[in-house]
Structure formats: structure tokens, C-alpha cells
Length: 164
Image (cartoon, rainbow, N blue to C red):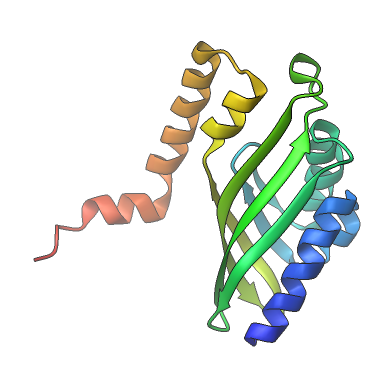
């Protein structure tokens, strides 16, 4: 995939996400693609990705949801971009709270589409804007910590000796 191809794919990816059209969003992925969301977890395959976007993501984020990617880079197989996103919460407990966050996205590419999507977002910033209680944040951060430590790449990193 060229840099220009990746920029076009990113434009469709974010436009589809903003629209809430899960089917359209899922077509940015290969059939067995994986979307790793920091809130909703891993979603495997187009049907699961479409469901996540339409029935979880847009259930919780209002119609004002926006997502824009900046400074994309692509080597043909792996690509990155940083983003800003914003929404007004529809979650009953946080109804009407506006949130803006930034993040970094890593894309594993195959056959001109996304094979894997990974994101790194400071969810604490989002939770603060929502007004999440500290005890609940602690539980969530604990789960995120476990996820990070249990990932195969983290385990491999921790098993290697320090260089130098």
C-alpha cells in the first residue's frame, strides 16, 4: 500500500466511523480483520467490527461524534497516525457530557485494507471529562493494565534482556 492509498483508506475509515455505518466501516478491514478498541476490547471479523461500531460505539457516543487522523505514515505493511476525536456521551450516567481525546493508531495492512487496528488512547482523560468516580477508574485502569501485561508482544519485551 502506498502512502496515498493509506491516506484514502484513512479518510474512508474515519468518515465511516463518524457516520455510524458499521457495515461501511467494516469494509475498511479484510474479512478476518481485528479491531482492538481500548474500551470495547477486540472485535474479530467484519460482522463483529460492524456490530461494535453501530451497536456499541454509536450507542454510547452522540450524533456529534468526530474522528480525524493527522500525520499519517505508511511503509506499505504498517501505518500510523495520531488522532483527535470528540463526542457527547449518550451513556445514561454521563448523558450530555462532552469529551475530546487524542490517540495514536497503528494499522497492520493487507491486500489494501486493514488487517489489524490498534489504538493507544489516554482513557483517563476521557473518564475525567465524563465524571467517572475514582474507584471505578481504578477498576478500569486495572483491567487495562492486565490487558497490556498479558499481550504477547509485552511478554516478549519483558522476557528480553536490557540492551547495552
